Image (cartoon, rainbow, N blue to C red):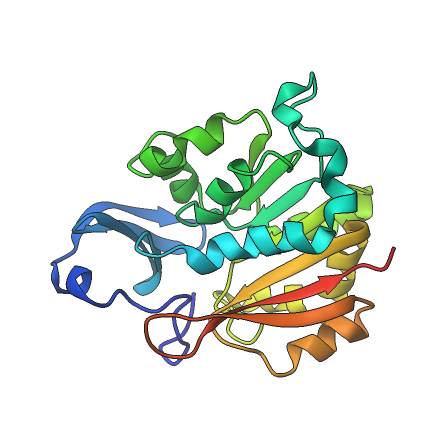
Amino acid sequence: MPNPTTPPTSAAPTGPAAEEQPVTVERREGPFGEVVLRRRGPHFEIIANGCFLMDTSDGRSERLLVRAALDELGAENTKDAENPKDTKDATAGPRLLIGGLGVGFSLAEAADEPRWGRISVVEREPAILDWHRSGPLSTLSGRALADPRTELVEADLVAYVHGSAAAGRRFDAMCLDIDNGPDWTVTDDNATLYSPAGLAACRAALAPGGVLAVWSAQPSPTFEGCLRNAGFCRVRTDEIRVARGVPDVVHFGVRPA
């Protein structure tokens, strides 16, 4: 997890909620260290190895990550899947990979949109999966998990992306939110995802015209160049204003058709 000088994945809670004392709901030792679920007032927080990762107080940027990826795909790629739930195949439509389940905002956004087809969520922490399947976070994600398009995959995202590329498994959009950003990774091995080899694997795991969207706690001045060097086009960075501090951002790149 981040070292003491590494900024957290998301800013710690502020305002009235921050004044409430957190209550530990569950503490679990996982494959990558300690993971803690806390409740602070009406909101839940996830803490990993003592580092605040995310909470349920504001999911605007996580939702935008998925919403903007669909917009980037364009209407011509989704017009045949306006109401996939009304067809025999509920997974018809663009295939979405969400990297990191977190508190479930990105999954909830995807499940609320009928144009998505298969929604695959890759999460490596068993505790987080359990908290969503049958624990306290199930009240937030239960409807999305019950959606026939949703599948949860317990795996390391970096390995999963490389495996998908090698196996010919393709997605129309990949929305990745597992780190503070390309420059601040939660674990050292995650850095390989943003390396030339990692971005090449992301590109290979996308269908032609597919969209890569990467969440970051602040802009990465060099990442746009990395995306272009990896063969992505229509590269851009969108800012999402936050209560205080630098904006969250989403980096976008498209695999040429």
